[in-house]
Image (cartoon, rainbow, N blue to C red):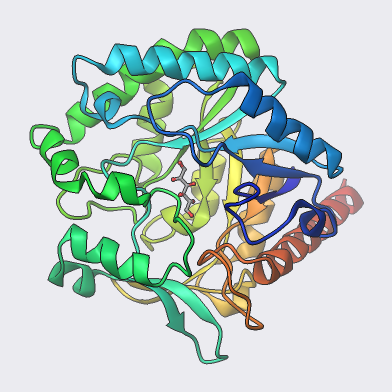
Length: 358
Ligand code: DNO
């Protein structure tokens, strides 16, 4: 594995590259052109400038999170081929710049969903949290307004105000899109992009749905082991892979995370590793990365990644807000840096004990 850190880019992130460079073991960033709009082809000069900025700081771009997918591709309208063409152009440019991992999601309308961006934990830290009962009481606009109020002035990934302004129209587009339709639209998209991925050796890493069940009655298809295996099999190309996001899949306690990792051996191209604490069904909050702080066995997760030969980029995921930091919720420096150090420690121990045994 290669330890990395998500960085939204100068002007979008509260954290700088030099700070990231000083986290032990972090060699690369996972970044994006944060102001790009889904459906447009990226600008080669902007990609090159981003790459130079990262390299000048002594780091590399280890992958893109995300190249977002236009909703017309997800709903399968007559314009999807045009947007897919643009996606292919972007992949081609990234491939030529030696960038070989792209994370994306196929969630309708929203990316991740939370009911609270700053829930207080007993130690005084705050975390992102989800309570289905709260979500059931509100509509999507209200949810967006609540989240926006607590975003500390940052644009949240997947919750861009210009998208949210079109929320009604976006919902309308999904009226006749059920799970099967969404799945076949994903397969259509993947089949169309595989040739360019083969040519430039680009690993596509779909991000699981977060939380792993339908929200506001919108269909969700990347929610557990069977669904993921079905998707991998439908386009059985090594470049069609997943982001193993423990926090997203782990929203459903039925998902056995180490088992999913083992089942997807060879097709995990990116890992987001973080912990959650389950309070009740449909009610969870994020936790420190440490196993003891949440509900996951982080050692078992890292061991499964190690034993399946995972060699892609990995990153700590959402952190708690601690030590008075003001940042994009979930994406501060301090707790994610602690997370990276902890994951590195687990990996070193697993690697050394494995070597000692063999
Ligand atoms: C949330 C992230 C997601 C993820 C996208 C990938 O914090 O994990 O926004 O980046 O779903 O496209």
